[in-house]
Image (cartoon, rainbow, N blue to C red; front, side, top):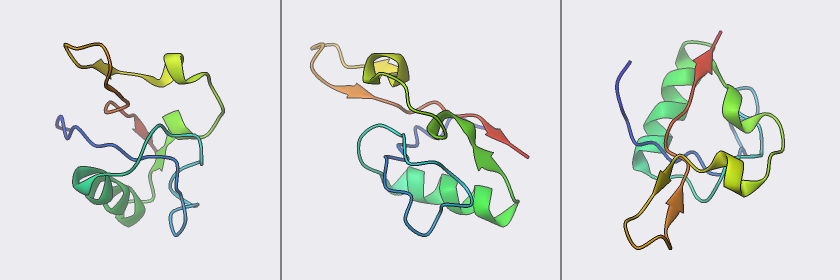
Length: 77
């Protein structure tokens, strides 16, 4: 795989078979591409299936320490 910097967010409407509703933030364009790729190959984005504290979901912090994102994901069959 590649480093997509995909933000999948917490809105799983239309993708309930691919991801849970426990992502962080809002989906970006790369998140759209990643969720569609997972849907096409029957993969599940496992980091969004179970609730966790937001501090445990963050995988990237901006240098200003005010912007947090969840951009690293694992897809499993």
